[in-house]
Image (cartoon, rainbow, N blue to C red; front, top):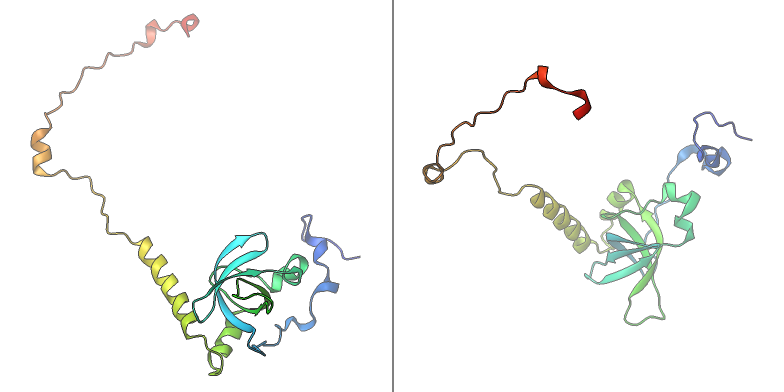
Length: 177
């Protein structure tokens, strides 16, 4: 049995027998037929589903199967703004749902960009537009200041300081508190 040296309840569940030898990432998987496509994950929907867009700007719902859940999730994390390989369901026409086949990490996707036979131009453009949109929303053109305009200063009457009653510490009765 593996000794729990780092603490926590889930640590022993990460036993060495389930980790790949050498820590080498999975072999690059490219689309093999017309029903397999590289897509861009735009948002996570929950319940093992995510919204993806193909190179043709078609919106699909990708279903994340058990291969990408549970113990195997560590090496196959699917997040928004990531790239995955999906398999379309040939019995559906028009295509609405698909299944996740492979999750690309950054190094895999750099290799896929260099392959001219895989069309991913619109996917890259969509990802760039999304990051451009989020950067613009962070920098609004609102400026907050404490200065008043001259008109507002003239409209406000000068405030006279009110006389505050002085507290006398001698007259405090403990029973009244």
